[in-house]
Image 1 (cartoon, rainbow, N blue to C red):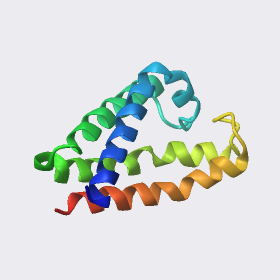
Image 2: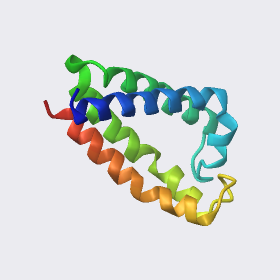
Image 3: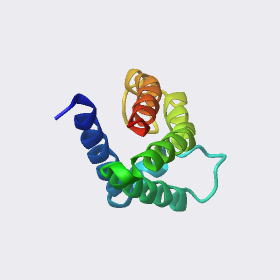
Image 4: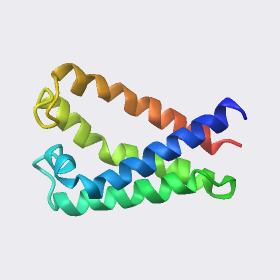
Length: 120
């Protein structure tokens, strides 16, 4: 098994489990929603649905290209929540400022992985 295939399976598992958490623990995700956005619960559920669908699509070579680009768009769309969590110095997440701010660069790593996964 190649390193790329391993990352595909790991990222798929990460997205699917995170998507499920959007339903199982919606309250946590709503806490990091920026106040300027409306429909917090609906957006949390919608992003969860997309994480589950795109994470599943990532598993199949036939849909991997679309999944990768969909994940890139999703990661960009949810980035304001990560920024808001950092702006609260972790209070919105119930964590430290270091963790909240430290999470931000990982978004670029996840976007780069999603882009890499679009390549055959």
